[in-house]
Image (cartoon, rainbow, N blue to C red; front, side, top):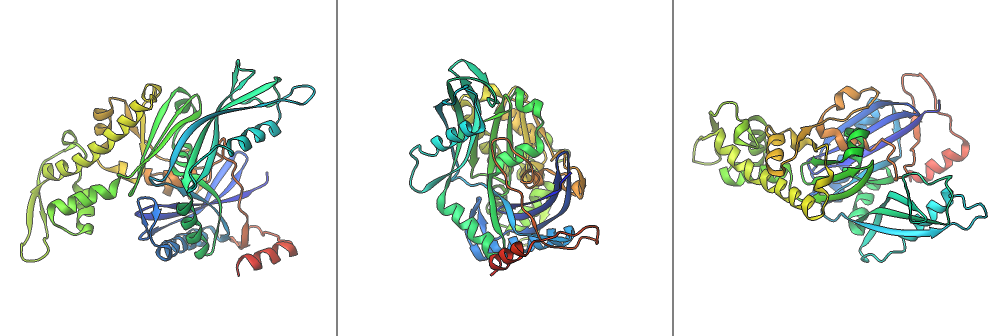
Length: 413
């Protein structure tokens, strides 16, 4: 089987993650991944191009060193409150003599969607068909090869801010790479942690990161709704910092070591001694007080999510429950709080079907998006990147034509 090299980049508010994988038809091997602290992003948006580029460079160098190869083009995750989604229904007529529906007809549908009016500062990120209808009657997920005179599609259309996308591309370019595909982060996460049965029955994925929380709802194996919220792990840390009058690093350490999202999850309520800044001396608080601070923000987040699912009418679709992932979901008691607020069975998940290689090191909720950036996602056409310079243990060599070398030379100028 022919091997293809795929590289992904997860631009998070707290960390930048990079991944390089070998993908074959029925096998995926993680060749290398890297993580670097992120200081140039805020709530999914690039706030400092130079700092973001440095973090990208650091994470990619770690991944490339571990993989033993260098890459150029990256699948880059996109998030932030600028993301909006809508549902749009359109149709085309089938004009060929035998009325057989072809890939060309699906492309005509996609091109037709691109003509819908959108704000001047937005661009279409994804057009993902939810379902197709032939002659207004037959409903199908795969119309190719079927016969009819009219083909309709219900599409999930994702819009993104043009400046936000441009800042991502400038950061990636400055780091020495190029963007092959932009992929909405909750969709990437979905395809790394959900199985087909959940997506068929109906499931809500909640990916809690550092700066944003992503929601994706699936039913009948198709995307139904996406939403990005500006509340996540960093806001919880900020609340602890402001309430207790401590520095950010202390607040983050307290959250991770002693934090709970709900009182019922506390194993033993004990005193915590906090080293204070200035003349106040050490401060003593109880775990239950810390939990109250955390609970207020996390409850607000799940209330917003529950309201979103109710108002859009999609809550009744999530028959297999809510799935939590992302680094922010590791806070103890988060699953219990989500069940309490949303009234829906909830479980914590990690990336699945990562294959061999270094996959075990990525079996954590915080790597859900990163793992999804190397997946083939239905409705999203992903190009495969190719290596540029290689020597992995001498096991094989990548042969490049003279023309490829010339193209690489000018790309790297």
